[in-house]
Each structure stands twice: as C-alpha cells, then as structure tokens.
Image 1 (cartoon, helix red, strand yellow):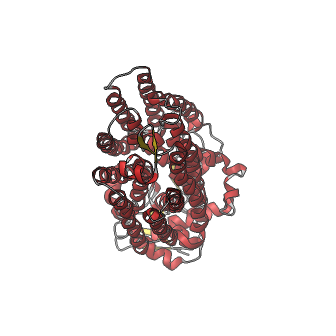
Image 2 (spheres, one colour):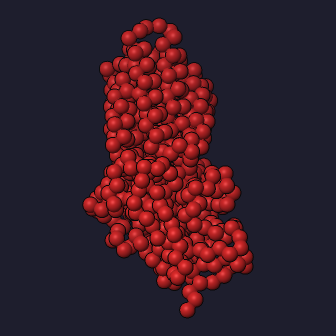
Image 3 (cartoon, one colour):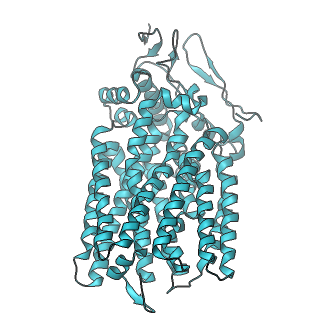
Length: 552
C-alpha cells in the first residue's frame, strides 16, 4: 500500500504518520524538480543558496534577533551608564574630590544583571516546554517592561540608598527577562533552521548583540552632554521600546513546529511549517522531517528535563554546550562591554571613552559579519582555537602597557581592545553560539540552551563582580595590567577547546546523534563521513557509521 503522496511538480513525500524509521531527514523521492525538496544534503549547500531557498526562515531569524538587540543594549547600559557623570552624581559618592560609583555597588550592578539572567534562563527553559516558545517570549517581554519601570523610576526615593536599592531591584528583574528571551530565541533558531543555516543563524547573535550595544553607546553621548537625570533616564526609557518590540514579535512569529508536534497539535504544526517554509519548500516534507526527529529523540532521550541533560548518554553534549556558553567570560567580553568605564580609570575623559566604545562596537559588528562567512567555510573548531590564541597575545600586549606611564597609554589600550573585539568577532564569539545551537539532542534543546544561558550568566556575574575590585580607583587599581587576567583565561580556553570542542560544521541531527552514541574522539569528528544509500524497497537511507581520515 502506498504511504506517500505527490506534489504538483511530481515530487513525493511520506504522509505524516507513515511508517519510516529514518530519522535524519524527510524521505523524499524527487522526480521532477528541486523546489520542494528538503533533505540533509542541504548541509553542503552554499550559504547564499541556502538563504535564498529558506528565505522565510532567514527573515524570521532576523526578526527574532530583536530581543537579542535588546539584550545587547541592556548589557552595555548595565556597565556603561556607571561612567556617565550625571549618573555618578545621582547614585554615586565623592572619592578624593571626584564623583565615582563605589566599588561595592559597581560590582553589584555589573553582576546582578547576569545573575538575574541565569535565573531567567532556567525559568525560560522550564516554560518553553510547557507553554511554547511564543508565549515564553511574550512573558519575558512583560517582565522586561516591569524591570525597566523599576530602573526608570529609581530616581524617586529621596535618599541615595533608596535609589540604589530600587535600581538594583529593577536591574535584577531586567536580567531575569533577558535570560528568558535569550534562551528562547536560541532554542527557536536552533530548532527551525536547516543544517546549512544552523551555524550561521546562531552566529548572528553576537552581531545583533553588538548592534544593541552600538545603540547604547550612541545613547551615551547625549547622556554625557545633558545635565541632571534627564539624559540617563531617557536611555533607560528606550528599553521600553525594545520590550514592546519583543512583545509584538511574540504575536506574529510562528511557534516551533517541533514543540507543537510534541504537544500533539499536528494541524497547528502544519500551519507553522507552512509559514516558515512554503512555497519554496513543502510544509508537508518539512513537517515529516520534524516528526522523524521527534520520534527518534523520544526513543532514546526520555523526558526533556534538566536532569536528563546530565545522564550519561547526554552528559558529554551538555558539557560541550556549557563550555561554549562560558567562552565569552573566558575571552573577556565582560571587560569589553564596560570599556568606557575601564578607560576612564586609565585617565581618558568620559566623552572620548564613549566615542571609542562606539568605534569598537562597529568594528566588532563588521568582524562578526565576516566571521559568519568564515565559519561556513572553515568550520567552528579551527576558527575558535586560532582566534583565541590571537586574542591571548593581544591581551598580553595590552597588559604589558600597565608597566608604563604616559598620556598615550589609554589610547594604545583602546587600540588593543578594538583589535581584540575584531579577533573575537572573526571566530570564537560566533562559534560559541554555533556550538550552543547545534550540540544537544533536539528533544533536550530547550533545557540545554537554558542551562547554557544560566552557566554563561553565572560565570559573567562572578567575573563582573571581581573586575571593579581590580581596576576601580578605590580597589586594587591595576589599570592595564587587568588584561593579564584574560591572557590566562584565553590560554585555558584554547586547551579546553582542543580537547573537548569537536568540529560540527555541516552535521545533521542524525549525524551528531550517531557520532556521540559512538563516543567518537573529539578530534575525529572532522573526519566522519556519512554514506547515504537509498534502498529501492522502502526508501530508507542507510548510514555508514565508520569514519576515515578524509576531511569532510
């Protein structure tokens, strides 16, 4: 009995619910055209062709980066507003005749946002598998608006202590929303993008993070020019617009078909697949691909819980995801996003520091855009390791400036920091997001992404709390020597990447499931070659599980 059906162009597909035990792709017998075909051969499709074929997915990925832009804006504001003169007068204290934010509060405000984000990522992972990706986005945007409200009105208490407490509470709530939004966006993108786009789609997150930071740095210029609270209050109010944008997005973007299938909402899943893929790719074929993935994951991954991530069969994949998540804290992102505050401690004036911060962000955006193309050509493992080594050298060069005095030292340090952000953008920063989006099994994608967000934010909170103690004027005041900290952490990251981060470029979900099940050594991932042969009887591809020393 025929269990398939035909498209108008003559190509055929298995009907949802038909018998098939192949899990890597939808079973497709194409007899006349390529338009409606979706299969894992797309893993070798050039980036430009893949973007044209899956143009709807590309548009959705760009729209879903709106919350990521908000995250970047919030990240920069968290640290950079502490360097604004008007903010220091309202929330700071005088130290040796000048206004500063005391190191205790500076550490607290740099750490409380990431700490809240860690909690938000866990909450987001829990909610995603219960109410879906769309409604988790909606919930996160509402919490974000509440957090911004607390921050904006923190000037109301008459005493400075009251202002600091209210500001801290708003920052914490805003951090929770950021964690929820980031984890949900990562899950949505990693679930719905085809193999050819999965790495690049996750890798654009740093670009939009930098876009948000650029908006924040440009906002800092008028903030520093306006006397009183009007300037920084306007900067805080802008976050409401971003929260509203995320809320509107949650109404229009389709939910993940995989989530809908797991909930038994097949008709809704078909509608979502049509919105994401048709007409260039058939929604029926796309849905069958998702159904096959879900059935395979159910057969061996059991329940999608946080505990399941740490069971033996998933532990290695979880550890790789967590390692990728903490990479930004290891390569120095926490110091880079507060570069203007750091440069002021070296003697640079507030306005110049804000302008140089904007210049560095623009350079980073260009580098990240280039890095996405490099990842699609060279792979994630090599680019990550090479750029980490280059970054370690640059941090060491900057640290050595701490042994010298002079008016040019702040300028040379700023040059090093711009070079560092370029190096990171060309490789390891987008690569870390690619690992987060690809490594875990599909059923555990939401909870593992949330765990990654929690690990990243907890690590960032710890580092952010320590940094002001090292470079602030009422702390150790190490100046440029602070960079030596990141020389060491970058070298540690290189060693960890060499031993634990495999090459995943062009790998399908089925490939990775097989390779991890085989307990393949990290350095052999690059050489694993899949031979797909379609049997004439049942059209089920066979996967050759051997691998040879031939790069793919």
